[in-house]
Length: 230
Image (cartoon, rainbow, N blue to C red; front, side, top):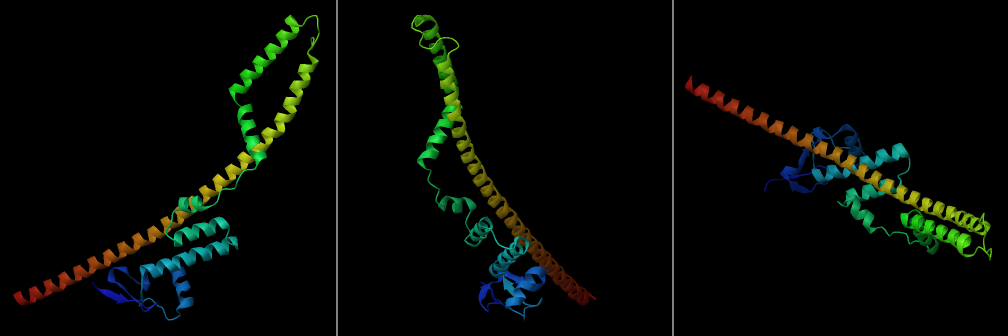
């Protein structure tokens, strides 16, 4: 297998990984020259070395635009360097444990917003009214207009409202976490698409060079044949 020596690390790499300095973008080339001032268009480097400086360039852009890399962007860069998917990074994170009050609020909000609660509460109201109107007419436990029932309904509404608000706050936290995960996935997809485009451009340029070299070789052979014939 043919190999070449990288002008950056002086290490040996397969010839298929060789990239000319002419094909490296100017912004990445400037980043390379900070570590290797002697690097120019006539030098060669490997794809792995170019990927390393691409990642440094992405990190530099984030630092320039945002000044400080956020935790989300840092996770994306880490997943790129470790060749991992965002889902693997997210799964490895510890999910925060819910407190007893949060679990109770979620359960009560889930039950309070269901048809089971509505139907059972309507049945309770009908039973209460029927008992006080028809059965306890003489004892007057809670006569019309059902003041005690109104007090119970007001108490239930007063307690149910803050519980539902607590559950809504929990749902907003879940939505924010979901939005953060979507942002990380989209950010990594954008970066990887950019890197993939550069690799495709590199392959196309190399293929064009090979075609030109084959064409030149054929022209030279044709010229030699014509000389022999003449």
